[in-house]
Amino acid sequence: MRALREALILVALAALPAIGEGFYFRDKVSWQSPIPASELVTVDQAKAWGEGAIWVDARPDDEFAKDHVPGAFSLNEDRWNELLPQFLPNWSPDKKVIVYCSAASCNAARDVAKRLRNEAQLKDVFVLQGGWEEWVKTRR
Amino acid sequence: MGEDAQMKLFWRVVDLVVGGIFVYAGVLKMLDPVQFGLDIDNYKTIPWFVSVRLAFYLPWLEIFCGLAVIFRFLYRGGLSILTALILVFIGATIAAKVRGLDITCGCFGHASQHWSFPQHMAIDLAIFIALAALLASELRRRASHDPKS
Image (cartoon, rainbow over all chains, first blue to last red; front, side):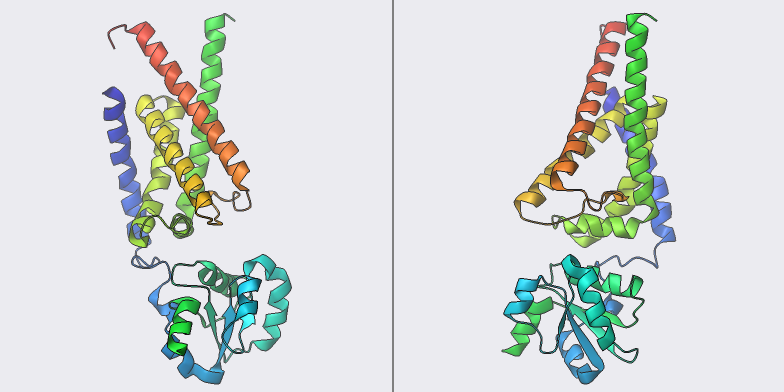
C-alpha cells in the first residue's frame, strides 16, 4: 500500500511541470497530427503546383525502382549522404519540395522533410498527405 | 567495514546509478518533447494525440522517480514506477521488432539513435534487473526492520 501511495504522489508531482511545459510549447506543437497541417499537401494541391514543385521519394530504393511519381528524385535516409548531393542541384528557391513515402502511416517522408529543412536549409518543404498510396488512388 | 555496511554501500551505489540513468534520460527527453513524441509515434501503437501528451509527461515522471531513488524519498513508489516503465518499454520494443518496425527508441535522445536492437535490449534488461534487485533488497530490509509490514 505504501508503494502505491508513494507512486501516486510521484505521478501527481510529475504532472505539474509537464502541464507547465505543455503550456509553454502550446503554439510550437501540433497536437492533432505529427505533421502540422501547414506542412502537409494533398495530391490535388501538389498536382496544381505543376512544374513549380519537385517530388522527393523517401521510400527505400527497391520501392522507388518499382514505380514512383514521374520526375521524382529518390532521397531516403539509408543513402542520405549519397543521394542528397544528387538531388540538390535540381532544387531552386522558387520551387516547392513535396516529399512522400509509402502511406499515411509511414514516417520516412516526415523525417526526410525535416532533414531537408534542418540540414539542407530548404524552405517550402511539404509532406504528401496519404503518401504514395494516395497518389496511386488518384492516378486511377 | 562490516559486511552489512558493505552491502548498504553497494545498494546505495546501485541507487545512484539507476536513479541517475533515469534523471539523465528524462532530462534529455524533457528538453525536446516534440522529438520524443515522434519517437513514441514511431511505435505505431497509440494515436498521436496520446503520444504527444505522453512526450510531455513521461520525461518528468522519469526525472521525479529517478530523484526519488537517488534521495530515497518516496523510494518504493519511485522504484515501482520505474520498474513498470522499463517493462512497458521492453514490451513495446519487442512488439515493434516483431512487427518489423525499424525504429529509434529515443530513450536517451540522440545518444541512442544508432543503437541496435540487441544493444537496446541488453541495456533495458540490465536496468530492469538492477531495479528488481533494488525492490527485492528494499522489501527484505523493511521486513527485517518491521516484521509486520
